[in-house]
Length: 140
Image (cartoon, rainbow, N blue to C red):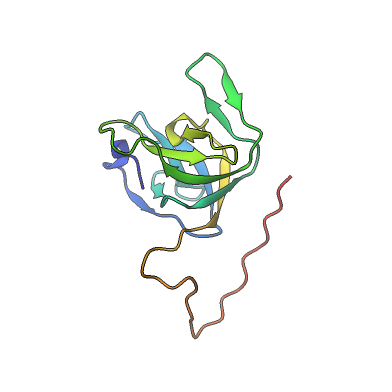
């Protein structure tokens, strides 16, 4: 998903193994994910996508100071999806709490670990071409 406020911004889908960066998109009041190589294009993430952040996650807590979570791994999801005209894109953390993507501090890097399997798609796809194995991700 890409939050409703990013519909006027160029976007594309996330890819496994790529590193994303949190950014504020020009002409919007919204933060989201973009590629390090193309910061003007919003990267849309499907609910259930697993992300690994390079450092503990920092976010604006609606107070003067930012807060830091003791987590580097989270799952993309939606908060209050039935409430119109508000931000829904969120990261859920292992303790069940979530942070809206638009609250994430700018400049944080996250790697897409795994995309969710879509209904009707096989869990693994067979191809005739051998794909190189992704580089391992080392946390901490």
